[in-house]
Length: 309
Image (cartoon, rainbow, N blue to C red):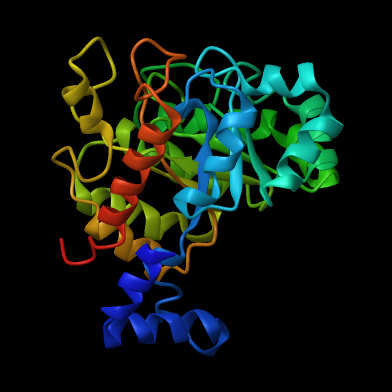
């Protein structure tokens, strides 16, 4: 609460106007919809490695979030923990801490293997299932556009299933993937007009150009369902911890100010995950839950003060 009181104390007229724009969003296009400290944060469980859900769930509200994003192996194992404890026990754990299931992340299942998990999402109230795309690699121009169109057509039954389940499939612009470039991302939403397929945008996998990232946010508009506050830094291989942490907002060279402004100006209502990958996969980004939470909050304070960059 102290973080938000401090922010409120120094809120500018421009931010106040942005808050009003959110309250009266229908009054006109182009008005700011929300200040950055009103972003819809989600806590990605893999940031805590394979720590127990009982230890992670209490951290959700500490980072200003109300939702959790559950990851399976190899990045975490909280999806497997859900099965081991049972869905009812998991739901009770969330209820005890006033937390909601927002996202189920499943790169393991891929875009064509999500239909059974959609039923779990519907049962437990998750809004989004995230995965990568699928198709040939290394294409450009007309060849890439044709491959994206084919992928879009292949997704039709899965999008229909998502609509029936009341969930959205989020495709990340993952590296070494068919949907890994700004062109591919934009073509995918063009070929799939359904709101039940959206983009999980990861700046880590894009050219580290603040203007390009902000422009892509504006181009995607309401079709973006997740924004990973995540930069490339020195990558996510075997590095000294201080170099590994350069993936976090406010540590590496990428300025997030243009992205924050684009999110505000488009009235972004999807999730924001402050994110990085540790090495090796499956370990927490820092040794203890408290340290992980503190690092996420450091990055959150940076995002919430980065409008002027």
